[in-house]
Figure (cartoon, rainbow, N blue to C red):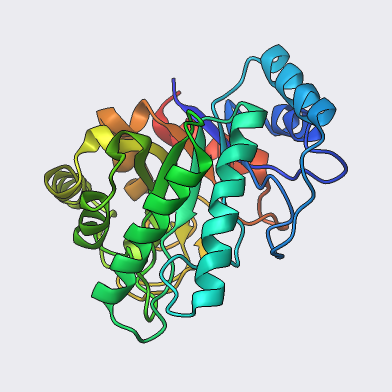
Amino acid sequence: MVLVGCHVSIAGSIDLAVGRALDAGCDTFQIFSRNPRGWKAKDLDPDVAGAFRAALSESGIGPVVDHMPYLPNPASPDDAIYEKSIATLVMELQRCELLGIPYLVTHLGHHRGAGLAAGQERVIAAVNQALEDAGDTGVTLLFENTAGEKNSVGSTFSDIARIMEGIDAGERIGICFDTCHAFAAGYDLRTAEGVATVFGELDDRLGLQHLRVIHLNDCKGDLGSGLDRHEHIGLGSIGEDGFRHILRHPVIRRLPLICETPVDERRGDAGNIAKVRELAGT
């Protein structure tokens, strides 16, 4: 048995996401808690937050994962962007607490030419500040690996390890591993040997015990392409055999698996969830 789900819309009201997750056949699911394409967000209505909690409790599915919006960049050398990024991170941690969501996923950003080391130091300072300002929310902040695109921070396990080492409240952070991003960054997940090597290195650098959520996505690009383009499970460069090997890993099988895959004429969310279950042998 695997826990698999997808990213679900909150259109209309955030509590409606639970029903959409059930309709798609989710065991677990991910949301944006607000419009991901802007800086501003309305405060959560306590009644709506309560309705979300109630619907979630009645559904029996979970855990729920919240994803940071697109604009924040905690590695940015631009002070205005940087400060807004910290403020948004604080707000999302507090929104997760109100909604009863245990995990918040964040990308680590882009250094925009300032250099990897400078970007990493900015991220460390931003996360330390945000965790302090948010207070003890009980929410675990998850660092997501990136696809190796230009100026990215966090594409390698060593990059992420350097940042984790600098976080004061280490018990409040963890890892969200994205299969598409890892493959695009050069981590080969197509064979049993490749999967064993990748997760062996992850264990050595980061510790498998810090994995909390898997973003299970195939990749449109080639190995090491740096292309952050998700594909349906089994229809991209990782392929069905790759996902069979990934899903046989004993640690991965125990974690929430979130598909952030396309919805098109070939397959929708329910189809990708079903494909994961098929490849996992459940």
